[in-house]
Amino acid sequence: AQSVTQLGSHVSVSEGALVLLRCNYSSSVPPYLFWYVQYPNQGLQLLLKYTSAATLVKGINGFEAEFKKSETSFHLTKPSAHMSDAAEYFCAVSYFGNEKLTFGTGTRLTIIP
Amino acid sequence: EAQVTQNPRYLITVTGKKLTVTCSQNMNHEYMSWYRQDPGLGLRQIYYSMNVEVTDKGDVPEGYKVSRKEKRNFPLILESPSPNQTSLYFCASSLTSGRIRGRTNEQFFGPGTRLTVL
Image (tube, rainbow over all chains, first blue to last red):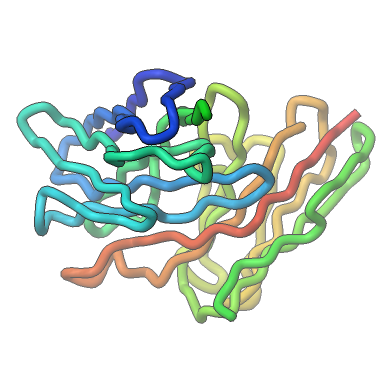
């Protein structure tokens, strides 16, 4: 069975500050990991994905995430927050040969001017 | 434009009145799926379809039905809606890349349907 835990349902950072959103996974087989972003009143958009290639993954809008097998983590970071980053972020896990995504409960990111 | 579309986007209905939420994709994807999103619970899979005429239950299938008669369409049917089905629903699709070595199963999501059952 696979699962995802996102620590912190709400995170607030100042504009220009580092963004760090935490995701830990549980999977009995090598995982595929994803970060999705949901802007208000919109569907989910893929930010980045890990597929067993490079452990540091770069995504859109300046976000990146690092896969750490020893910590079973896939935290999302951005060096400098922008007001447009305010949204809800979801971490998700699946594995090769299975299209099913298991999502975390989401983290709502607020940017303070 | 490659996209997943859902209709309606907003729906208010009453308990017991059958409804259908449509989902269509124009990317020739084999895999389609329905999720519901509830505060504090994230997204949970309701049903999925690996291809035409192939559907299966997800994590929360009770009270829902689906059909996949055509590759592009995957409607979600609530035969007798109840207030606990008030939620935000998302349809998603992917090229069944989970089975293809070296590819990933990225899913593309529709804009969502906000359903309220009174």
